Image 1 (cartoon, rainbow, N blue to C red):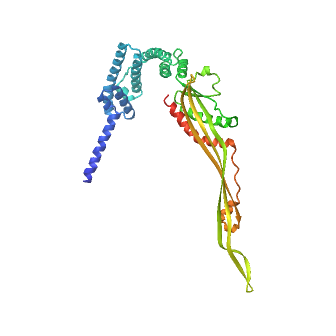
Image 2: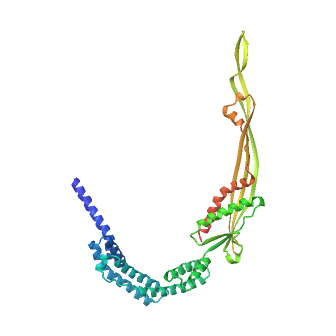
Image 3: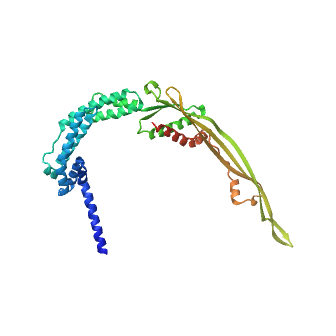
Length: 382
């Protein structure tokens, strides 16, 4: 039974190896008619295993077929003569040259295909014509004048530069289409009272830095108020206004709680009884007072988004709150009626509260996350 099980495992393993080998030699691609991939895979296998007979067979069969297939695609593209047919022609010449390069770099493959054909001049010519085609299309796309079309034009101009680096004025057009395709938002300086302006600016600067980082791979640009000195140059699409409104700093509330403390059998002195000195025990009491001082700060951040015609597009308010507190204790009466912890608490003083600037910063912290999520979600659609 064990022997049969081992043989079954061996057979399964050999089937797996054969399947993997068939894939790596390009045999499956050959059977599916993907001669280019089959040829490339076969050469890759022969580089690592020149004696692989299946790879030798696949290469001998697929290179001529892949070559014929590519040349047929080129002829068909020339007959179509559409506005982007040279993109197809470039792709096929690149494949033909890549197959030739791979074969020349593999001694065993070169034995099987001694003279793979290269199409260097044809590829150079096709790239020039493809660049001209795409350049014309990209210019028309850019001239539509919309954000979406400018983004398409940007990708097209980059493709032109890949075909022929520095073609005509393509580098400047890449910059122009990137600018035209970038959603530009001016973040206005927060408006709040002068005493809290520094903290409000700090909040806005940090928020915009994080938002900018979130969109660094998208065509969205945020300009702060110091960068937006020349609106005609920026040509913003939108304005983002962050204002702290309806805020209150330093509302104080104090509370007091009193507990009656009592402890029995506490030595309170001594006395002479029948000529003998004895300890005197009694009940001691005290009033234990606990105090709590709270300083509360609250505020609302208004987030408003306007278009470049000063029309309100979106508005949302976010509230925040921060409560600072300190506690201290005192007592009246006999200290011995208190616990050890209560005595220690009575020896501590009330803490000094933070200044109003710090109170302002603290209540904005919960607002920060809400505002970030809201702004990011809104601009994700662009």
